[in-house]
Length: 123
Image (cartoon, one colour):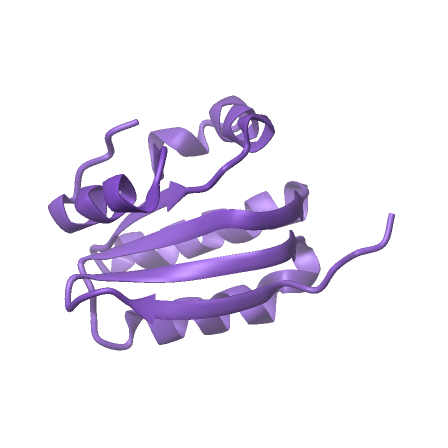
């Protein structure tokens, strides 16, 4: 399998929430890209960070580990992390790894942003 480098972009939807759009593969090799995106998203100290997985091609255990690292950093910053755009397969992975107990997984961007603003972890 060919590994696609992770591409990220950050959108500041408002003062309270930033969105990190993920495109490609999230693996251990994605650390620099993901953490740089998190730093950029956090620069204005938003209340929440929403992760957009709509263009995710592949994620492995190394990528899950990076998400855990991001969650630890967000928790220290008192930020709520939400996610949207996950395929059924990755929703199941989040459930199996219990990451869905920490990241609010939502059906679309609007719900993820609302939850990030409120600090809710609605699934």
